[in-house]
Image (cartoon, rainbow, N blue to C red; front, side, top):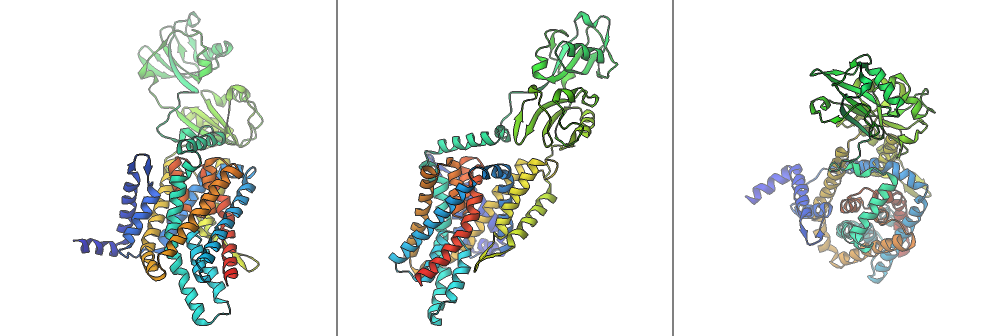
Length: 567
């Protein structure tokens, strides 16, 4: 029976992949007191175990999911990332230089102590620091050394073996240290979570609304029903006179619906309202609460109030409204029966009560009937109707552009510099996520879709890493001995601890940013996912991007330097 199941897994690797992801998520949810592995760590462990069955995996599959994950990360934090460049971007770049230098220094020291050859040291460095680019450059550097062919070939053979042994802990150790112990070393998980929430609030003071379990107690635009009893309505008055009467009394609201003699009507301008009718007033809450009995008592008429209204964001782009005060906008005929729920400018709320001047790029959220909103939005700018569908044209072309950019190579002296297709996807996510925040009329991706791209993309990638690395890990241990694994543990752990100290004591980053910077300087995307899962926040990604780009270059430079020094 076991052989039969193993045969199925080998013949259909996709089944093994889903087994790894599902079992990893199950294991990651298990908790002992306050300790939990987390999904990323657990999926990696299960992947290594499943990998012992020697299941062939498709190379492009790993890349596809990795690119999808990185694009989702970039898309989520794009606006905040470009804002952070103005303040802490340079400090993050310096952080990456110092931490990558520590990675080099620790590996060099271990290599001298253990008397490792250039091939062993190169494999140790690339695996323990999870920098696969060093494999190719290190091999190329060794192949050009003036050594006997037999010695040269031995060194070249040692590189992948040492890499396979040390890469497992290079990934797993970084994930565990940063995702599980990192927050505790920075003051405790609760403290770091709180610091992340504070930073989220500073960058986007409505970030908590992204949680579908939350609703806001504040309803800026409200619809309320009143029974008409005021003497003003003797004899009956048309709707347009009622609205003028209320506006003159300091209550600029609209009559939206009327119940008269048991029947319900839309509040057309010339419809007459009489004593005893029930009307629905709609408008900003601060105005409606000041009606002061101008109509009559409020009533709970569920049937009258049970009708759909739309709420849509509109990008201000029409010249006729740019520079206009909000009070002037409301005087326009096309704004009849349309209310403004809120105004967003550069990611921040602008209070409509302050009568702000409308600027190009503002996003105003309109509330009203579909017909009224269509008319108003055509005069204000572009309507971005909420939808559960993702703009897959945007996603596909953005990742394509990022992948092409990342595949390009620039030479710095004799050192090739390339972001890789994965790094290009991250950059594409940052840029296109920022563009979406500036022009929210295209590129819509619902939060639930971002969550799926983020979590499924990362964990499938990690699962394939584990499945592929499982057999080579055991073979490598047999070939080079267990001490190389211990050396890899030290070479991985010390730089991470140094990075945590550096971010906390020297650069004084927000703890969540420190964790992101450490993940980026280690070029360990899996650890970024673990940190985000632990904190329940995407804030660490803001510290990841700059350090990832800088460290990718610096680790290659240090890898070449290591070969040169040891030779």
